[in-house]
Image: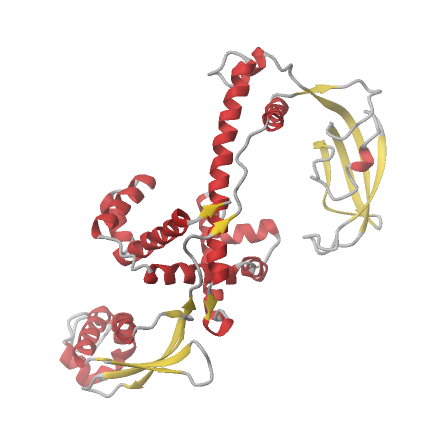
Length: 431
C-alpha cells in the first residue's frame, strides 16, 4: 500500500509513504539473522549454532532491523513506486515512520520526479538536406594525407634553415629566474616544429636556425598551466640543435598506390577506391546529421512542465556520463586516479565539463520517452531475445551471461527508444 503526495511549493517533488508488510519484515529478519549468526558469540553456544528465538529473547529483533531493512527495502520501494505511477529521478531520501515490533513497517520517501513533457510536432518534420557529394578536391586532399603518411624524414645539411614542419633533434635546459625546474631538461629530443607539442612561442623561435646552433628561447607559461609553480612565469630555455630533418614525400605514382593499398595496382585505382570510401563515409555522416537535426527539432518543439529540468536529473546524467568515460579509460588500462594524475584535472573539473550539454541530453531522453508513450511503442519478447543475441555477439559473451547482466525491462526501454527515433526519421523530409 502506498500514498503519493506532491509537494505544494516545489514542482517535481513529493512524498511517497509506503508499507513493508509484516511478512516482508519477517523475511528480512530471517535473512539478517542468517547473515549475522556466525558472528555472534554467546556462552554455552558454538558460533553459528544459536537459534533465532534465543537471539531475539537475548538481544531483541530490533538488533537486526538495519540489516533487515537493507534486505527488503529496495523491492518494497520499487513496488510502491510502480503502484503510485511515478517516475523517480536521483536518489530518494527514505526514512522510517513506524517500525513497531510485530507490525508492518511504514516508510516515507522524499522523491524528485521526472517532469511532464508536452510534445509538439515530432512527425513529418522538415530539415535541411545534407551534402553527400565527394569532389575531386576531397579525393586529392585524402591522397595528400596518405602521401604525408608515407613521407620519410631526411637529414638536411648543416646550412639548411629550419622551417615549419621540419623535425629538429635538440637538447634543452629550462629555468625560471635562474632556477632550473623539474621536467625542464632533455637530451636528443625529437620535436616537429609547428606541432604545438611545446608551450606557445617555443617552436616558433627555432624556425630559421640551423644544426649546431645554440639558441636562447624565451617563453611565458600559460596562466592555466597544469604545474601551478610555473603557471604565468617567464622562462628561459637554452637549446642546442643537433640535427634537422625534413619530410621527403614519395612520388604520386603506381608504386606509391601499391605501397598504400596492396589491393590496387595503379594510382587511378587508388583514387577510385578513395572516392568510394569517402562517399560511404559522407553518406553515413549525412545520415547521422539528418537524424540529429530531426531529433533536435522534435526536442525544440516540446515543452517541459515548469520549463525546468530538475537538478537531480542533470546531476544523475553527469555522473552517468563520467562513469561511462572512466569505464572506457579503464578498458585501456587507465584508472580514474591515474587519469587525474596525468591530466592535472580534478573530479570537480570533470563534473563541470560533463555538465555542459547535460540539460539537453536529459530533455532529449524525456522527449523520446514521451514519444514512446504517445506512439504506444511496446517491444515484443521476440525483439528482446534478438537484442540479447545481438549484444552477446557484439561483446563476445554467452547469451545466458547477457540475460543475467541486463534486465528485460531495461532492454525493452532501449529498444522502444530506438523505435521511437526510427519513427521520427522515417517520417521526416530533407529539403
